[in-house]
Structures are given as C-alpha cells and as structure tokens.
Length: 347
Image (cartoon, rainbow, N blue to C red; front, top):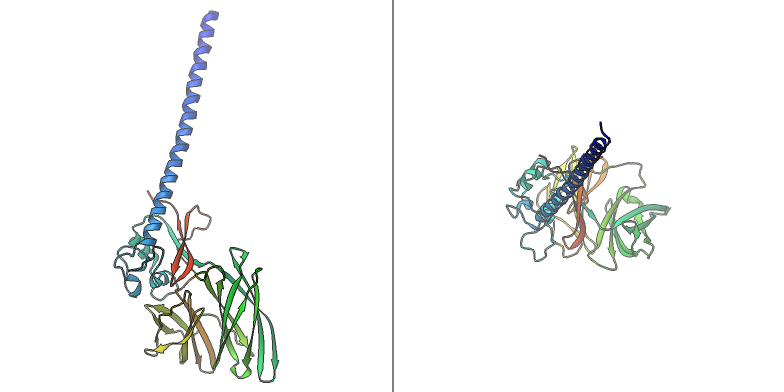
C-alpha cells in the first residue's frame, strides 16, 4: 500500500475514533443530565404531594374525628383554621399505629393517590431526658430527686419545667428551670402509703418561644418491686376530645382519669366506664392523659398523649434511598416536626 494511502487510512481511523468518543461522551453527559432532571422533577413532585397533604383538609374535611372514617382524599390540615400551618389533632393521632382508630398503610396510600412507598412521622422539637438520681425515706414520706437534660437536636435549651407526679391516691406538681446548659432538677415527697407504680409527667417550655413545648413521662416504682410496662392493663385512645379505654386484662377497676398540660391539671368527667370527656384546654401544649386503677391487688397507671406524638407509620426504608421533606407545623398551639419519606415512583 502506498505511503499516502496508509496516512489517509490512519487519518480516517483517527477521525472515526474521535467521532465515536464524542458520541460516547455526549451520551454519558445527556444521560447524567436526564437523570438529574428526572431526580429534580421527582423531588418537586414529592414536595408538592407533601405540601398538598399538609395544607389540605382532605375529604371529608372532618375525617379525623370519626373513628371509622377512611378519607377519600388525604389531608391533615385543621378545618376552618386561620393558620396555614395548623394540623388537626385527631388526624395526626389517627396516624399513630397505637391509636385504636388508626388508618392502615393501604388506607393512607389510596387516599393520597400514591403508587410510591411512603413514610410519615411526627416528633417534638425538644428532647427531654429524665434520670432518677436519689430517693430517701424519712418517717412516712420518701423524697425523690429527678434530674433533667433538655435539648433541641443535641443543643442544650434553657426552659421552664412543669412536673407532675401521679401515684396511688396522690398527685403533686412542681416548677423548675433548666439552665443554659439544659440541666435542671426537681424534688418530690411521696407518702409511703401511696406505694406502687408512680408516673412523672414533665413539660418543658422554651423561654425563647412558648410554642416550643414538649412532654416526657417517666415511670418508677415507689416502695414497690412491681414492674409495669405501658399498655399492660389498659389501652388509652383519644379521639374527638374523648378518651376511650379498652381493658387488656380481666377484673379491672378504674379509679379516675386526669389530663395534664404545661399549665393545667384537670380531672376528666366519666361518660361511661370506658369513656371520658377531654376538655378543650387553652394552652399551647401537648396533653398527657393518665388513668389510675387496679387489677385485683395490683395498682396501675396507664397514660397516652393527645395528639399521639411522636410516631412513625408507613414503609420500612432501612437500607433504601429515600427523598425526605420536613416541615415545622402547629398542633394544638405547640410546634412540632412533621416528616415525609418517599421511596420513589413505581413504573
């Protein structure tokens, strides 16, 4: 082959290689751009779904307050609210799997019109850690010292604490403060005759913003070796400002039920042996509902919150990629965090 033909051959081959390389590079760039656009479009779609669920009341608008009502369209906003970020206390409670009237995962997906995996969660803005640091019996009473650490996403918060202790035929309250490092303590004296399971209910309110109010409970044994876990004797479910009580064991005798918020303690009025009226409390605070009773010779205390926060419901996203959207919302006048997780659209 003549030399000029060889040169022409290699030149053509080089041009063809360059063209293929350019096509491959362009193809990779276009694929990456297409994937990026698809991811962006999907994120915007999921964000729009999240905001639609949060700010719409759903259909029917009062589905949250009717125990057997499955919404035709899924919305969590409070009906007739003048606030754009206010969620309905019953709609939120019915997302908690422990609520006796909770929506099932298929119910939620169908009402939301989704084919993607979905997870919903709500949490308080403040974390309250409680530790029983000391107890001393003197005469007919025993003094307990509780230590607290209050934080927001790991950062200490200065708060005002309002603590309630509930025991057999006895209850009391006390105020305390946490310092700028989030630490505080409170003492309670309990009569020795009130031995058995006892419950400490603590509310923390941020000094900077009273809407940032959270609760924590701490169960302890007062001069007793009995060890009771939650829902051993009763299951408590709040809905439409009514407390429903289901007995988990026979021979239950209920003593009374109480409601606690940051600023109030109220005895609930019995409608029947299994239902109590929950008053509308004008307080920017979660409500903790406590029921005392006995089973034969065993004294017990059961509790729940209204709304039933914190909770998680929906798909298990362990080791899976998710798109997550978190919003600051108001429920019953206090602020909480509501999070959506999406697992991607099905084809």
